Structure formats: structure tokens, C-alpha cells
Length: 253
Ligand code: 13P
Image (cartoon, rainbow, N blue to C red; front, side, top):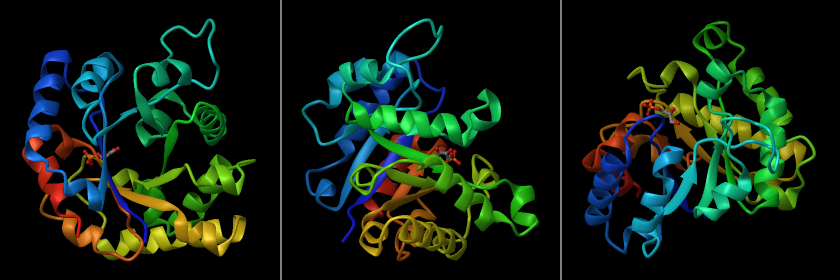
């Protein structure tokens, strides 16, 4: 049985004060039992990581970052390393989000390098894949996602795979209000699992956690999470509202 994960991607939102306010409200709304069913991760912007860490460190909520560089240190102005993320209390890092791919020219190749570096420092990568609207309309969504998964996981061992979470986030569903139907999402998750089965083993495919992301809210989350191959969600907009985020967490059955 794969334990569910609900991760909030705050993107480039909330200053320190607002981050503090949001995490305090989330903490107030959750109880111990929730964490038996689901792991909860919040991924604030870099500037809020330390503040949020200090508020959650005695709770079961885990901290994640939204990106990192694949080198340890050096002349990479504006970048943050795995070591830095570890030192601020991160356990997870989102890698290859479609917004990073679209606006910052992130590629499967750099995502692959970042995954390896994250694993070296015991950070759990949440690796994002997903097709654009054009690709779905051309019917090539499965081959696009298959390619992304294969490229991102190049030279990753089955032992390392255990630490990796895949997030299927169709680009057309992100921030648009057009969420994938539970069936559409589940079909792609099954496809990803079959790719993993071919690359590794049936056992690895069964163990892999695959999250769905793209316009998840408290109204559609229960149906999505009830699907056989959906192991939780990567939540954007709704993770910025404490009530919505906690209702999404409570919708895990
Ligand atoms: P929305 O939930 O705002 O659609 O964003 C999804 C996402 O990109 C999470 O990483």
C-alpha cells in the first residue's frame, strides 16, 4: 500500500510574514491522525524556507524547495544548492516543474543532473512531467511523458528510484481550472507505471509514488485520490489557502 502525499507548491507567492501566517493556519487545522494516512509537504519560496522550517520542525509536516542547482557551489549567481536546502531543513525538492521548463529553459538533461545531486544529499526529488495542450490534442501525450520519464531517470538505479516521486502535471491543467478528469489522470499514471516496469521491475513500478497536479482543489481532490494509481497531489493555487489545502488533505481516504 502506497502512503499518499499531499504537497503544496507555493510558487513565487507569499513573503515571510504571509508564509508564517499560512503555515500557522495549516498547523492549526491538522491533527495527528491525518499523518497516518498521508505525508504532507509544503514548498515555500526560498526566502520563506527557514521561517517555515522553524514553525513545522516539531510537527509531521515536511519541508520542500521548488528548485535547486546541480552543482555543489560556485559562480552560479541566483542559484541554490542541495547542501543549502539540506541546511535549511528541506527533505524534498521539486525538480523540472513545467514553469521551470517553460520560462527558465530547464531540460530533461538538467533535471536528470539535479535528481542525482538531490539524491546524493538525501533530498527526495519530486520530478514533474506532463504534456502541453497541443501535444494532447495531437494524441502524443503518452509518448511525450514516456520520453520525459526515461530521460529524467537516466542512470538512476532501482535503489535510488525508491526516493523519487513523480508528479504528473499536464501543462494545460496548471493554473487554468481545467483539471484532468480522474480517468485521464489515472490513465497517464498507469502509463508511467508501465514505463517504470519496463525500465526497472514490477516491484519498482508498484512502489513508485505518482502525484497528480493541475487545478486540484477541495472539490475535485477526493475523486482524483480515489483512483487506483494516483498517490496524492501536487497542489498550486489551492495550497495558498489554508482551508482549501487542509480540506484537500482530509479528502485522502
Ligand atoms: P495549480 O494547482 O495552481 O493548477 O498548480 C499546479 C502546480 O503547478 C503544482 O506544482
